[in-house]
Length: 498
Image (cartoon, rainbow, N blue to C red; front, side, top):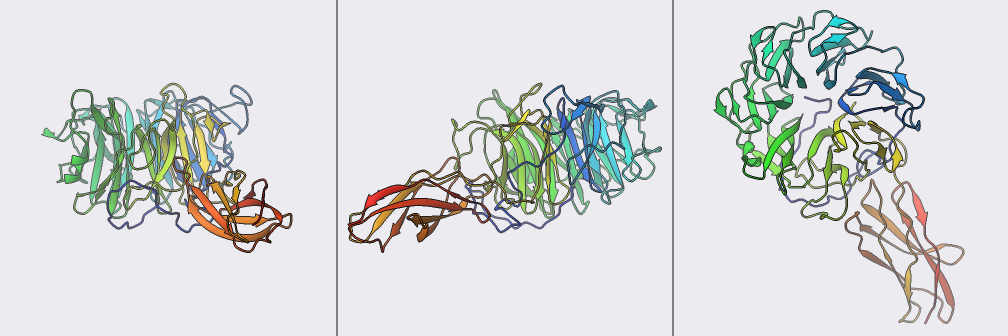
């Protein structure tokens, strides 16, 4: 259960580009221009936003300001740091030392606490075996949240007064809990909830109405019953519930093993992301109805999807997508940040990008929102081609990305007093529907206007016609492109008017 809740209507499963919808400044509701934020010196694996602060966990031991080169201007932060949600600056008042990696972070519904899970066994020298909690107002370690978990905690979720967690462990407080367990958020006591997974749990989330809990990972059985990679379970006992949408994931076969990497609930829908081992194995996202458990849609983009977050009516995803049937093919490169329409899985108008860095060479690994922003963490070292390691931040503030400057128009005059100007459509990283204007002469008189859609994989030509050009004269024309905020103009071409 995450910070933003909305009710989504069911729709078909076609994978295409949906037209931009109204938003603050862009079709995507968030700009593709990354806002300043501090960097880390290694992978970010856990993220949560609460009370105006972003909590960041991972493998890092140092953080540095935006723009600082690797190894310079560093401040010690051992596996956990806190940043200002509005500015991206390091919060110097929050500084805890952990002796192991943080894999997951979740905030309480009221934002008063954040919970962390990972490999650590000490926080500031105090025993905290793989789970700890912090008071967001004071930054202090919470005294009574200290279960003893026998091995890695990979995923956390809150439902009601329960903290659900999954990972690779077999014991909690000396009691058998195979890879999934729950404790009280009030006193840290172990709950009876016991799904009993036979292999690792990578992802966990509770329905927004707390009616059920979803698990994802590499398991083949829950409670001794066959359930490959995904399960819906009772919120108090962990018993399996019917979930026909699980058919979205292919059963393991030679050359293909697909497992769930992230789960995001939002209102009446629950969304899943998958990563497959093997050529052409299922790497995409899919959605199910919370009440019925039925599949709503499924897409088959290739390139493992590691993280999904619902923000302002869109489903943002971190992946290394290299092919999306019905949209872009192989050969267009790796597309590490994309968004989808939650109603049907269609790709939306948002195309910033990162790279992928060591140790996983994946790129984005985790994402979170404070309601109107998107925080992305991973192993990347650049964002939109600029050096930025481990952490990125996108908001709905500002004018968004400007369209690519248009090329010189190709002009033709075959009819008296008419000039036709043809140009390839431009490209905008956070809008697909752009306005094109044909400007005549040094006064830049607007003589024609049209709109057209374009994406990085489809940039058709557009033709605009001046129907009142002075016959027998030589006229110059240029194209202006407008995205609702930003205007760019190309150079002039000239033609003799019939």
